[in-house]
Image (cartoon, rainbow, N blue to C red):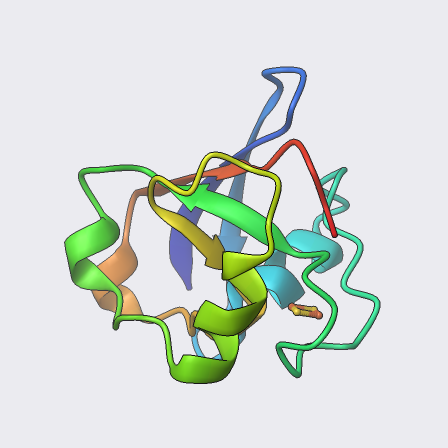
Length: 106
Ligand code: FES
């Protein structure tokens, strides 16, 4: 388990013990974090799982693959540290990570 803190768009914080091997998107859904829709189920197609990774942690996650980058390029959100949460797999190196749910989900 890895501790991840999700911050909803209203500022509510959800500190969860997330199962390693799940994506951030799956962990958010399992813990009822509001704002993550995940219409496509995690295949980087829908853009409804967008999050901002805290600056302290962005260097610990692999860069976006081309498909993810193409979806994010269309996003209305501030692109700073913007990622699709379905494309980030949780492991122990992410212990303590803070993730903000992005305002727009499309
Ligand atoms: Fe659809 Fe992440 S769940 S892009």
